[in-house]
Image 1 (cartoon, rainbow over the protein chains, first blue to last red):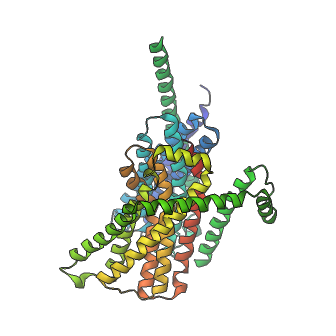
Image 2: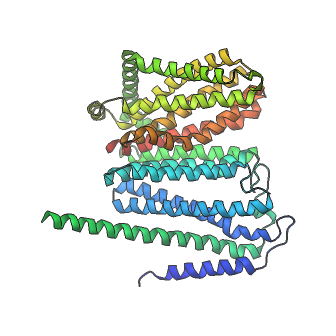
Image 3: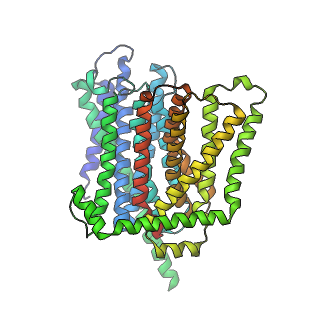
Length: 227
Length: 271
């Protein structure tokens, strides 16, 4: 029963975002029209993913400095839920792009960067699965995780701005905040980010608990078989 | 736009310097954030010269090792030559379709594969017992820095040789030779520093050949794209001021990667 409040908060925010995201008032802009509602889903998912990846990197650093296997469990599960959000973000973005830009996968540096970013983290999962020894797995994949985040940020947020991209804030396009963001959108957009982050934490927490239970059961099995 | 970029580059550089300072901070003998005092303390501590000495010895060891078993280096040179020749023969049917963009991209892809193959063996070629011996003798930072420097030299040699042969066989449409050579230099250092750490990671796992490719390709991609863009500018003979963005970005990526390797390798080595 303890610490249940943030799960309730998460559910409440997600319902609020779904209802207000579809029914709430939005500014009327040319071309984009009602599809601006995708901001609540696509953009918020990506921001939540970046936050989760950042948290994962922090836990990797904590693992390297303290050496507790728990931190590594948390880091890997956070990365997994971030990958899940990343794939969802890609899908929502590509549905939107299909109707607004006329192509589900336009040749855009940010899109390609996103694909590469997901590849980097899939490689992280592959690296994790190629070790038997737990401590060794944890240490080496933590090193890779920190390295990967340092490369991931330039791929997603810095390189696309150097070239012409269809996304806002790139290649001379203005950012979101400048003129098409009014208070109606803000009222849903910021809660949406918080809600998705909470949902990602919840997913990660469940998987970490499963891992811990499995570890305890394995240890019990080993100790009983020894007796 | 350029101003924002410069500010960002400056921010990244100062961030990595800050990280280095934090590392110095952890060293109990050197306290304080002041640049001058840190450097003088480091010198007084005479830790820096020791590391430099170690690095020099280690690089020299790598060179001697390479010289004794010549097959490795000559094998890589032969690899470059045969790949270039295969490309030449494949494009033989339609020589006129080899536009400068295709020429450029093809060259960098050849260099990428050469780099992955050449650097993959930098940790796996030495036997386990010998690695343990080095690790007892010197600090992990000296090992990673020496490996990076040595691999950069190897990459410079390979890509320089590859470029000469490639230009000889496929024709040479480069407009600004100086900028193209700078591009090769930056790319050689960058590829070597990224791939050295990844090779260190991959050598700990069992199926290291597959893992090396899977881990390194996505990570090296931003660097490759930047390099191709810079090389394209050099190819067209554009003014140098056009490509200053690319050069600073490449330099800052190199700096980040080398700093991270320096900080992270001690943890990798312990296992």
